[in-house]
Length: 254
Image (tube, rainbow, N blue to C red):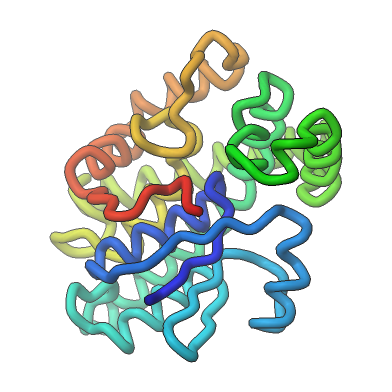
């Protein structure tokens, strides 16, 4: 059985889950504890980030590397087109989406950690010693995330500017391809990458970022969500999630 080592809230891990679902491959989503995951990741893959896919004896780190691996080993339902120009375009958009994802993570985390404890509740899980000692684990986790992702005011503001710039560029790319998909006439790596990276900003039902209590959202976050949903790219993300995100494994993991 394949195992995807993940953080449930990570949009990079959502991308990896989607890649596996798109390929119709069975897998188990196994949660690791932020911070503690570093030793495991370093031991298995020589780096310290998630997601990590274990496929029998193969260990693959990074969502893009997972996509390339899956296309090579499981070519059915290809993520990249055989046409070299379309392949390069898809990889270019994927790289742009990955850059966007870094800034979405910082800006989104900065908001979610100040607006309530839903994100922390997901991170520490429903049971285990982190839940048992949540009085201590929640402040520790919040401090760890703030330091790890540089959630200071200047960095967060800079990330918001980068989000605006990259979203504008991707929005134009989508328009240039007539608004249906980013590359060609069907879903592929570029689409999965962009949709996964923007999902945390859109409060999409059935995803880790669906808000149970919308009143806890800041005015800034609500305003940006409203602006994004009015753009072609925001409408596209919502449409693709509704019609083509056929999740086969619960994002909550085990």
